[in-house]
Image (cartoon, rainbow, N blue to C red; front, side, top):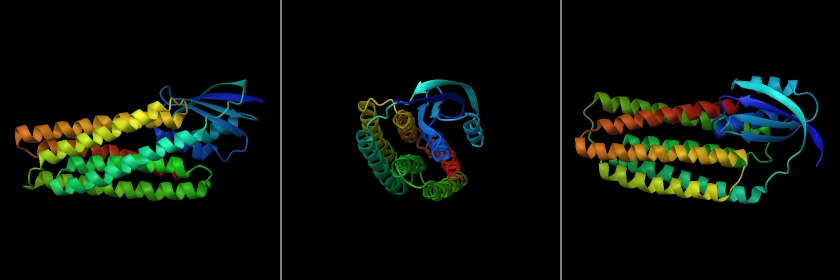
Length: 266
């Protein structure tokens, strides 16, 4: 292994795969950068590079993620983990997320549940991030940015439609959703996310995108629990309000995800 510079950055707003992808797409075209080592839980980034760190600092600054240069030292370039196993696991996670997007979207409309529809879009948001991570390997930066831009606007449009539907149902005498569908489908989605988390943890990878995927999936499990709780409250209260509240909250997460994906296209 060759000895090069290792510059450590504190990136305060780096808390999910979207920020990781933003940084990768911004820095990977720099020929001086040899390796990026992300520590998302601690919001740190180690950049292994040749030359001066100032140019890297300027490029990171353009993303406005609250970066701070902590220091530079000599280090050996780390050996990257075998990506074959990681990709296989991420493909499975992508299939699970996209599959439940279709299932929850369909059953959400059938049961008139905004909670299920919102959760389906959250699954779609995850699928987009995983797909970008997988398809980005070896691809041209311009192509990645075009895909990110289309995906972000598409997801944002769906979120806005969802918000408008939640508002319409708040203001109208819409029917109470079928709580049975909400609870049963969300339980299956919860199982799907638990399987995804198990697959990710099974890899025992220290790579950032795998750790970030685990964080993303853990958040999805919380959302699934929220929809299940809303279904239970719909049953006991015989009211549509719990479903609309959880739907509005999840749509806000979907909109936040869309904005982050759009940042990848800049």
